[in-house]
Length: 517
Image (tube, helix red, strand yellow):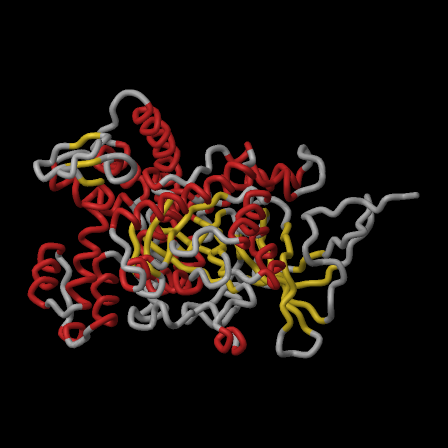
């Protein structure tokens, strides 16, 4: 059952600090669409049983037949996440030195988020009193675009990246960084888009390759380092530090097919309570050269001491490997005991499953992939209000001190309407197209008239109205679009018109003047 209403979806659009526009990018067959299913399932649009195999965003017949994404597909989803509380808990317990600086930066970010949350809460109360629609400062809108990974469809990736502010980079933990991984990541950074990373297909390490935990860790570390080499090579100073560090929560591990995943924070919470330490300290022991023994003693270098085991392998991979072994070898007593300790409760119909089907259900309940992906998106990808401050100069080719540029920098809904058209989508109606894009400032109401600024726009030239701007989102059945009230800045929209619009696709917000010879 869907976990939100269309009214809630529309209401949250006015809170630009609580919106995340993001793309899912990767090399072909690294598992973008299966991981996208985890968020779609968390929103209640598809069932837990179907997630992973449904490939919800691959809705074309040729995509289903070939098993790859051909066209970028967007979906809007509503979630609840207590961001300020989580940020505070993450920063507690920092010591002097580099850790204290990291905690201070996190605390400053928390203050800004708390201020935005307080304002959002006041506006939400006013909205509830006026319309009866209940949302809060914990409400978030995720506008997600699943893009193709095949090099032949790279234009679809370009169209998706231009209208988003963040990217979920998916990498197969077995194949590692591939050619298209570097291509799409470089493209994202050139568009000033902040990335987060998920290492996918961890189930293959355990079921197919049967890698020992320490060998798997070394493989994960090498893959993350390779991704960070690309990030550092093409980094834009305007983005600041975008290094993908598991300790900072910018890297997740999981399996899209089996719909499970985790960040270090998931296990940091668990062990912090057990060992009576702060979450901040515990997370830093779960990655890198940190080793512990059975007495709970920690040190940075085991120096050949077999009594000590790496934090990540011993406290994270070993329990996962144990469950995999118990389920796949039908050791019922063993895995039932572990599930009781972990607080995982299976329904009666789930207990009748066996093998990989049972393993998927257990891992979904213990480490749901949707939770860790949502956590990364909300905490580490920017809102339109934040992103447009540093993306405007790359998107807008006019002067930075004019009215349009200032409205875009502020993500001002009261400014004049300006929409960037990213791609044209043909409809079943002959000669009719929908222009898919994003409102960067102003507001697209119910069928307001827009004006087309073509590639040959000159100063003081009159422009003719050619399109009607509509809210372009999927209803909560995920398959139909429709007009459900206006769309404020920061949102994806569609504009409908008859006949093609020459030169409209892919141009900057304000095209350069024609050169006069």
